Length: 382
Image (cartoon, rainbow, N blue to C red; front, side, top):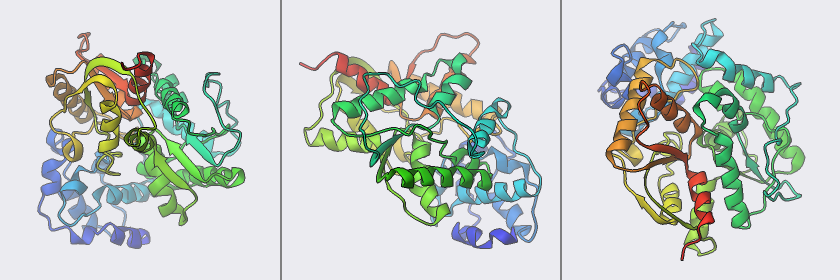
């Protein structure tokens, strides 16, 4: 780990007091006794002058629960990322989920020669600007809908709904015809080289088109563009905004009104959006603006919300499924008809768990937040 000395120092891992609070709150540690954040720090710092092959590092979900609880804000998720990068560099391999299909997709995009038909899904009633000073970053929703067709998650429906809501709010934006994956999942699994290839290619395209502002509805893309790109590339390239933050401001100012939808709904805080970027209120404000929607909170929620069990498409095992099942049960306990979330990963993983319940009929409908808000427009409020 000597070549990552400064990166490790920046995580403040040397401030770890060995108190074990991280392990107590870690959802993985609760179901997998072999995963212990405190002991991972101990083992790997003891071997810091050489690479230590620690298989447990691949089980971390990067849910930020440990960071939320740590009194010294030790960045354990970033420490894990560094360990994974180190292990991959020494020939270790991540245990990829879904046959490595998503990693292959990201690497194909990073290869610079891949040509995509990115906008074949765009409906004709979505209005685009002729300029590219503001763009909407779609993310991998078109690919998720192919890989997870059996789950009927329809991630693109959420993207299209967000675009229509922005049209409704008279926000001018365009799309990129050859947008690449943001690369965050490669970075989280330790593939720094693959991430940088995607990030640099995207930023070159932003500069070529004169992009000044980027809006996105994917929490992972938002974190990558707002935090990872400036940190890893060493420069700021554009303003990056999450779509609910824009909607909430317009709703507050009376410049946007949503419609009517009678339903009881609960909201899943995505880890990256919530604990990672502190966006808790604006998604709830969007829900609250729909006449007839009753929001009932899951316990726990906001800063202490339970992760959906998602990872960077690696090492998805029994502990992940148990976490997902627990979160579904918490949602069902609220009595809500709909579980809304703004994260495609949350929808994918929770829907997968619903399907795995031995044919049991789902007790709650998992929906995209933007889709829910856009559907209310079909019934204007009185």
